[in-house]
View 1 (spheres, one colour):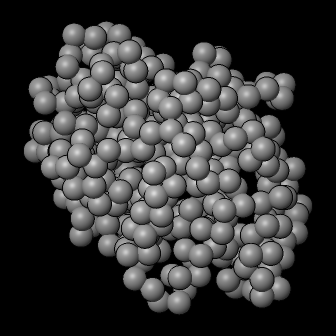
View 2 (view 1 turned 180 degrees about the vertical axis):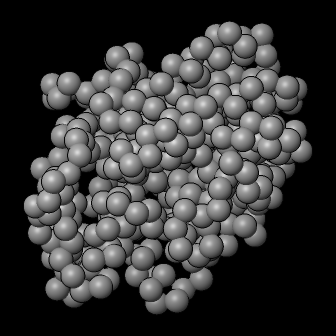
Length: 356
């Protein structure tokens, strides 16, 4: 089954998670705290009125700093206070369609925000590892039907995708120019389309589907035939944790880019996802195609994760059917008034048990 994160490594280790008020950063913060890490977070306030940060009580398990990473001075001050040993950089403007409305803000956050962080971290003498989260959309996508490998050309037609390609270039430059002689090792990670409980981001597929189902309306789907590498959020997070451990203990050999994607059979069209979710939700859940005019989004997107398999012994543990079951169970539990911090930690523990 491959390697899992090692709690002994993380116990009492000072860890910074940027973007801890978001979806992926929130799950990562809970997991790190569960393993005994001393977690600090840097982020804006939660991006939606309902948020994993609030629902799962993430502020209770970390030292939370509300800082805009576009503000270099404020970011540097917070980083100096935290003095991290490991950093996971998840903070970003993560939405393709929003990037059309705010291209400048997207680039300032995703590119310059990352550069501001790297500049602040250069002064951190205890730092051993920096993992920068970019995106599976960082590649130049010519729609040729092949899975992307880490050495493929970077690019992106929309402002979001191009900002992530530019972030990859910036990280590679800072790694070569400033971190070669530094104790810290720097890697980038490119994950598939992550799903899981607690994602309420506007204009994202799974939250939109569940909001429609919960309201008793058909879900409106823009591109039902678009293919994406779907995976539960815990899958790439396991990879990020494993990679950070190797960066910290084994050094520059792991300071490169890594894809974390599902098995090839789990790269499915949107139509398949929404139909399975409707079956699991029941209560008459349905969907229909949104016939409006929409900006460009890639049709075909798959990742080749063979480097992570070979170098990190990482492999997915949840097939897509099970990932969707976990997702629906999470939202059903939330709707029933369950303690969602406990429920989320239980799902993390169940995931960990799959690797034993």
